[in-house]
Length: 126
Image (cartoon, rainbow, N blue to C red; front, side, top):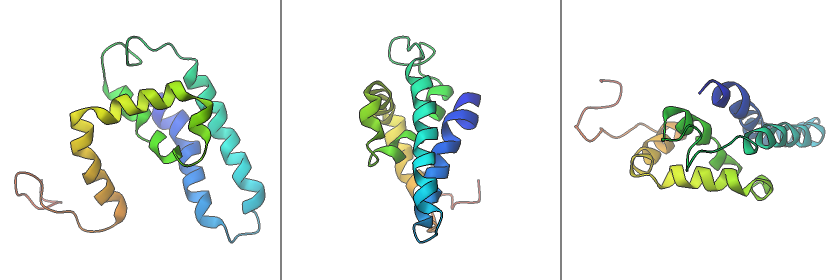
């Protein structure tokens, strides 16, 4: 989990926000650097041994954290360089719990108010 949050995720989030700076004079120079930072992290992650389908053998919170930002890269061409990582992410996304959680994550990231959860409790009240 630490590697996901402190090593893999930061350059992905930097790229994600850098795309919002397209009108800035530094964008043309900065954007390729963000991709190189991601490439470096993905190269290291790609070399990690995967036991069965997951990093530690059985699916864990570490796997969930590791793959949570990889979908942000789908439109970048970077997945083509590390197909094993994106197959790993796809296995995680295919899990029923991930499929149930994904719409809520999208709501949170959209900035729109969340609907009540499946227990009818309004967001912010649980």
